Image (cartoon, rainbow, N blue to C red; front, side, top):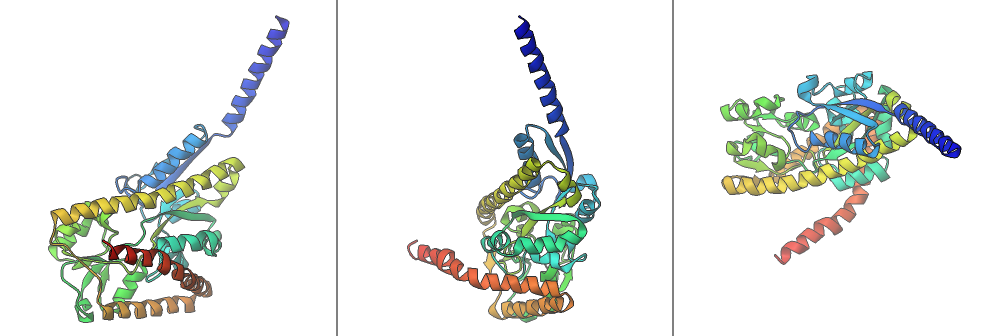
Length: 356
């Protein structure tokens, strides 16, 4: 009986110490995302991260996700994370181009790498090294946060047959692609997502770029703009998870590992989900609106876009040596990896089409 009492006491002490240890490891973070809560799969990716971490940690590592409707600053995520107001953020790196032009290179570049090529550059080339260089001065850690892959070139009310058709065209298109189109005579504008359909319907704008079928179908652009152009400007379109560096360094090592592992998992899942959603959405679009015409920009327009892209990138490189270094590194990696892409993915698709 005495031995039993001793064992009971030891077990009680073990439970107490274990409970205290677990309690000491409880972490409560907040994450701000650029997206409204219903913009799947962008908005659901941070939510999946939160759920996975809760499960991996036995409920000890909790991340509360605030959507754009909650924190009211969809393009304020960078400052939220930098200041520590939020420990984490989910957005797209090119939104911070006004803070640092180099951030745009991490998302995608016109005529740049595909999603697979860019992920290879990020994880096995020099990509993560450069991402750290860009964000370290701001006290932020940045990691790939999912991809939409190749984004479509946009919805147009009228067909683009030549360069003259771009002159005076009113179009919503952000980032470096907007600068390229501006060089070609397009009146570029940026309009809040909630106003895009009305603006296109009323003729306030003649064209707009959004994402691809998975997200475009919800916006209804296909109902009023029949020309759907293939992509050139965002071939990879990586999102990002941002982490406040000081907050990260305070985490127990095992939680750091959990966090980075979970980020990789949900980021990969986002691409698969978006690919699936786009195939479903496109099937629905073409069945319900058979008047949609998928077009590729004419060769002379594409050549002008490429020339303008080179000019824009050269100017940024002239102003910022590190921008130049990163862009040249990307171009060099793409030249190498594209050879494999062509004889694997591209040639396989051509071969497969020959027998269908």
